[in-house]
Amino acid sequence: MDKKCISVVGLGFIGLPLALSFCEKGFQVYGVDVDPGKIDLLQRGMAYVTEDDDGVPLDAHLKKHLAAGTFIPTTEMEHTRAKVSAYVVTVGIPVHPSGGQLIYEPLDAAIDALGSVIMRGQLILLRPTLVPGTVEQRLLPRLTAVSKLAAGSDFHVAYAAERVAEGRAMKEFRTLDVVVGGLTPACTQRASELLAELTDGAIHQTDLRTSQLAKVVENVQRDVNLAIVNELAKVAQAHEVDLYHLIEMTNTHPRVQLLMPSVGVGGFCIPNAYLYLRDSVEDKDMMPLFETARAVNAGVPHRLVEAAALRLQDRGRRLTGTRVAVLGLGMKDGSNDTRQSPAVDCALAFAAAGADVRAFDPTVPRATFDFQVETMAECLESAAVVVVGAWQPEFESVPWKDVWPLTDTPVIIDPRHRLDTFLPSPQPSGQLS
Ligand SMILES: NC(=O)c1ccc[n+]([C@@H]2O[C@H](COP(=O)([O-])OP(=O)(O)OC[C@H]3O[C@@H](n4cnc5c(N)ncnc54)[C@H](O)[C@@H]3O)[C@@H](O)[C@H]2O)c1
Image (cartoon, rainbow, N blue to C red; front, side):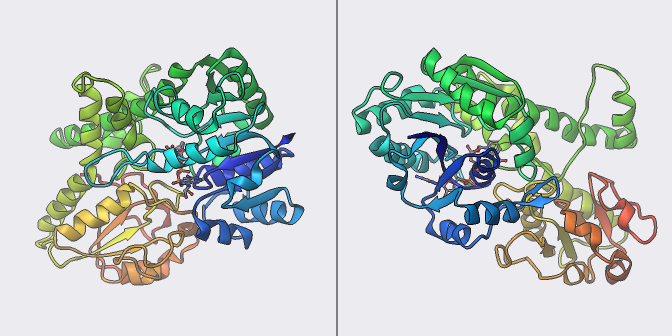
């Protein structure tokens, strides 16, 4: 077993850039994923994750390491047996879109597969966001049952949550601090040594439970901070003051840091954090603040629909039947991940209110949603409402002065003012509500 040979299990938005980041650090990486479609694309040099590593697209890293034989995508975990020193797992716990139930099957399956290949002396480093306690209460018993080996003595187990942001993951793998907690001090040490090969950031050692909690708490804190500003949007409107000016003035206090408003809070991480935390405790009512923050953020797309309808009404128009253009469908700026995307929620909320929705996002595969169109021109044609859902870098080279006249003097919903500098003449954009 070669120390510089590892396996990354799960090649999604996090696992793929993580695997290639290890390759860039001189590792040979077996990338394992159960999705044969993804492995086929990877073997053909096609990365399905939008990522830019200081000007180098993920595709370029992929092609380089495929050619060098340093990245080997496979569906067969068995191929990695005896070759690797560590398994780095990125398979998470998705949340059912309707109902919020946690879906453990993918992670359970990955752990069972690991149990059948793990050998003495190897490390399992878990990196997904988890319900705190999952490692001890769920994963270790499965690993022991399948492998018939003793976790902590025969092989090492540690947890170090992934903290990177999609779109700039490779850069952040190299720079961010990591919190790591092992089953034993030796497990923590072994994981720290591997992580130190990847990041120049500090490695903070703690216990297994604290490391799992820390990740979820980081996400909950962001949910609460974002909810503050999303709620303030209503307060600013009630006082008839400019929300952005209010934020600017408030942030002159050295200990205050209000965030910018948005079309909502999405992705695999922040919206799930409260659900994970709630699932980890018996008393489900102990976190009313976190629960409320979640509800405030989840309600933003609907509030934006109401705001647009009021502004149309001021112009003597109705939302029903009106063309609404949604620009960008990623769960945040620069991302092609549409899971739990507030931009998609906005499009759906406008459609549910009777609007004629068209959406354009050059990074999201066509026909993912039936309201998607092929070009910016098609999207903006006759639009009386324009919503900036997620700003994609490609939008900066759109010939705005040619396509903007296609619109119908639209109401602009652009909470982050991304569109301002691209419009041919000053527009009253950025009004949130
Ligand atoms: N996406 C983010 O921005 C982000 C940031 C930080 C942390 N995280 C966390 O990282 C984890 C992974 O997130 P993601 O966005 O990469 O998810 P993802 O769904 O994009 O990737 C998971 C991958 O695992 C594969 N998979 C499922 N079951 C498997 C199995 N049994 N064996 C091997 N592969 C299997 C899937 O096919 C998929 O490719 C989650 O816990 C998430 O919360 C995500």
